Each structure stands twice: as C-alpha cells, then as structure tokens.
Length: 336
Image: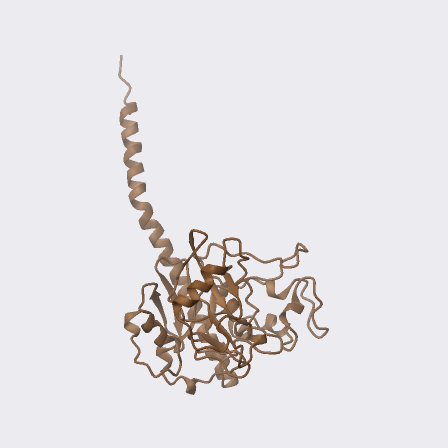
C-alpha cells in the first residue's frame, strides 16, 4: 500500500507558528509605513492651506483675519476660494454670524439655500488622516449636523490673543489683516499653521485679566483645578468659528502637553475671555496647544510655505521664538 504524502499535524502547527511570528514582526513595520503615509498627507494638507493663505495675500495684499467682529468667521473660512471651495464661500454673508447657518437657524435671505448646515460641511483639506475623533456636531439636538471640526489651526502667538483693538504677536490675529512686511523675524522663522486635536476640553474664566503673561505652572493649576473628565469636549469642533479655541492655537505650552485630570493624563486648554468680549482690562488670552496623533510630533507650516515637524520635547524657549512674528529672537529652527 502506498503512503500518502502530506503534512503531519505537528508540521502544520510549526508552519502556523512561524507565520504568526513573521506577521508579528512585520505588523509594526506595516503600521509605521501607514503612519508615514498619513503624516505625508497631513504635511501636504498644511502646505496647501499655507499656499492658500498666500493666494489670499496676493489677492487682498494681506493675510486673512483669524476672527472678525461681524460674523466671527474663521480665517479658514476666508481662504475657501483658494482651496477650490469658491461655491461654499459664495454662500457666506460675512456680516451674518456663523451660528445663523446652523440647521435650526435661518440664514440671511441673500444666502443661497444649500439644503444643509453650511458649517457641517466636511472638508478633506481640514482633516488629518491620523485623527481618530472626527465627527460632526448636532449642537441643537434636532438630528441634523450643525458643525464639523478642523485639525488645522492658525497661530495667534504666545498667549495674548485680542484686547478689543490689538491682536497678539502671532502670524494671524483677531480683527487684524497681517502683511508679509510685518514678519520682522522672517517668514521662515514664524509658525503660520499647525495641527490640533479635535474635541478638546477647555476651561474659560476671567483668570489673569489685565495681568502680565502668567507662568505655565499658574495656567496648569487653573486647568487641573477646573477641568474634569466630564467637561464638555467642545474645543476645536467647528471650522467656521474664528475663536482661538476653535480654529487657533498659541505657543504657551509645547506640543501635545497633557494635564493630570481626574487621575488621567488628558489634553485640555484654557481661555480667559472670548474675542467678542475682550477689552483692555479683560483681553482674550489663551493657552490653546498644538496637538496631533502622530507619535511624538506635530506638523507645522511656516509662513514661507515650508512644513516641518515639531517634537513634543522641543525646548519651550525655542518654541516661543517661532511663535512670534516680531520678537527679534534668534531662531533655532533646527532645534525643533
């Protein structure tokens, strides 16, 4: 009788074990390759957005304002025509507040009827492929989307955002249309845009009104004393809003900083007043941090159009120097 050729059970188990080991060895490399591709796409998004800001500057001789006192629309909304979203921008009446475009609101009569809430539009250019928390917001509970977030935000500088007449020391400002000539530190040494995580918790209070810039420790204490795990994570959840906690960031803290909240390390931000209520005695000041889901780094676009990664371990003073447009500091961009 002929013997049948084939695998024994032991041989089959050995082969399966070897395949399992190989898969285990290869998976990290595959994940790294996927993350590298996602970061490359994110880098491209930032570059295109910065180029759109330059196209805006070429057209209007200024960069867009990050916030305006009429409709309080964001600078991201201002550059819509330059990222091939001219039809969407045409539906905006700039002196009408963006909340008038929610699903349960009535837009101005002059605005076309889109059949959906304009602020809820998902724009791929505003989305980082590594973000794990992208979703629309139904703020009024009527079952229809009202807002959609953005993973990219405009730099407002170090801490002070707006005092009712003056904006801060960053590339973009509230009620301010910055020109290239104002970048005394150089366009290659000044941050323009960076990544942020959507749906961040934040605390808003009148702390530090009219004071000099507080220490990081003072702000940390305010955050950890007031933010809890149940605090509404509503920051960076609306690309239409020009408020710094929605489409902005500051360099008060280095990227990806976390705070001990209810026994867990969580992201959180601080603002003392909104831009709309700011005045010289109670200016809008903010510690709104750049964050990403890329391991250890955030992607950052400089005003000259270049994009670099900034590590979360960057020296705070080095990070501050690239946050200002006219600080006169020596730039150490190679230390990012």
